[in-house]
Amino acid sequence: MKCAVVLIVSDFEALEEAYALEQAFDALGRCDLSEPFYVLISEGFPNIPAAFIARHRARRIEIVDVADVVDSLVRDHPWLAALPDNPVYRVTLLRHLILERFFGGEAVLSVDADVLWRTDPYKLFGHWRGGYFALGGSGFLTYAAAPEWFDAYRAGLESVLTGGALTADFEEAKFGIKRVQHDQHLINHLQAKGLIRNAWEACHQSPEFRDLCLMSTPLHPKLGFPEPPALLAFRREGGREYFNDALVPFWHMQTSFCLACSFHYLLERMIAEQGGRPPFPRPKAGRDNLKAMLARQLRQLIIDGQIAEPRLQALRPLMFRRGIYEAFFGGELPLALFTDRYWWQAGVFA
Image (cartoon, rainbow, N blue to C red; front, side, top):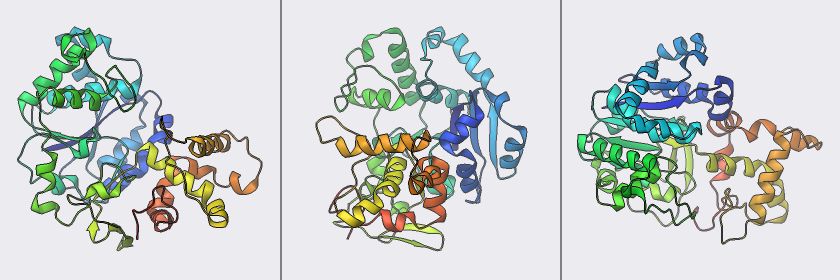
């Protein structure tokens, strides 16, 4: 098995600001990797500072230019020219074909750039010999080994990009989306068609995972357990985090969760003085979005330097992933956040 993330680097400084790669790779390096972790750059490898590449290569993080792999895929499949320009959608749709070709069809664990590892991913998932899985049904961490899986994905992607019948009926009812935008959309659609099967539940029941909390999103920590407990208690011990007695081996620091962390700092004083509860960080149709919308607007005003109030100005670093990582993994943030008083949903924490 190989572990890899695939990236497009149009602007390295912007990418670093958006994803705090330095901190994420430092955390990965501290996991004492048993095998190299691959960072495959599909576009823009020359934009990465050589010192950045060398520093992380010393910790078994291999940052590799795979533009030639992308070129060969486009030559073999001209329909790939219709990939979207949006770099996030472009790279997620294409990454599984890159991974298959670069690793010669070997089993591969595909990882998003916003995963912060606390455990060596090879030791964590290296035991698995079962079928494909998407952890928690999310595309942020996907394991694929069988040629048939890659064949099904390729056929699905061709259908997406050429208006084929296989994906003509795609719809994501949750958000009313009728066009495949990223690989999770496509994978879920292929599962619904019976062309691939997600074996995550069987994998999650493995004895190796008995004492772990494997969350697809920290916004729903109970789902990290095969049998969710009634209530949770969070603790940090020895530089590691636990829900109840289950170790958290990685954190999916997705945008919505980072927003929840920012909201905590923006609303902490208000909640402490007036009660209430912070909103779910991402406004959703069909529910009261006012608090979330106001918090997001306040966050953006702070980022843009439009706020004169000194206390809020001081919070600006905590509106970005880099600041969130420092506060979350080096400070006291989670000890307050994961409590019934400050969590967005009641009845989760004791």
